[in-house]
Length: 189
Image (cartoon, rainbow, N blue to C red; front, side):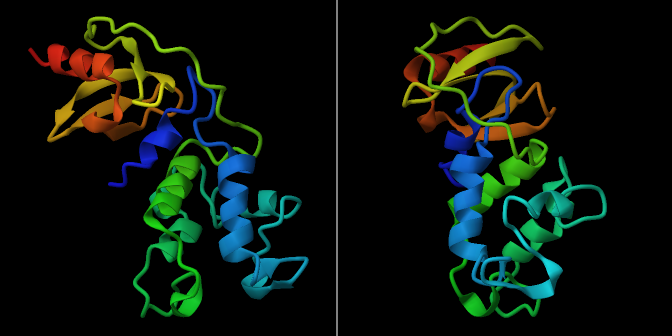
């Protein structure tokens, strides 16, 4: 798992969307998809990803299924091997990076909001003892904070469950502040 997923996870506090569509997802579409999927250039496969057209692609049975990233054909097609006929972008051209795929996956898992976005970085919070099942504040090594439920440790990662989506993410211990690392380690004792 890419360490950059932490950036997507730690851009918010509470129930706001952690991935900011306008700042993080729209640039991916512009840079990697618009050559073939924009009303300003061309629209292949009846798929336009312009802001005005994108809502038509989101929903049950559509290309982007909110909350179900691995059932969303848009994400699945971007993760196929280069030699697969359905891979996007095709023929190995301008492929999405692992970090971009992680952001797309997180955005779809969080509900594919076109209006949600990350909150401004909050000041670092003091570590609190991990309460069984309760929400705790977790601070990244660069000072961003989220509230999430501690679910345990897995290898060198912390399992954190996001209250807004119910999705559990693995966050590398090394990407957490020393206080949050200590909080995670003390919760397993």
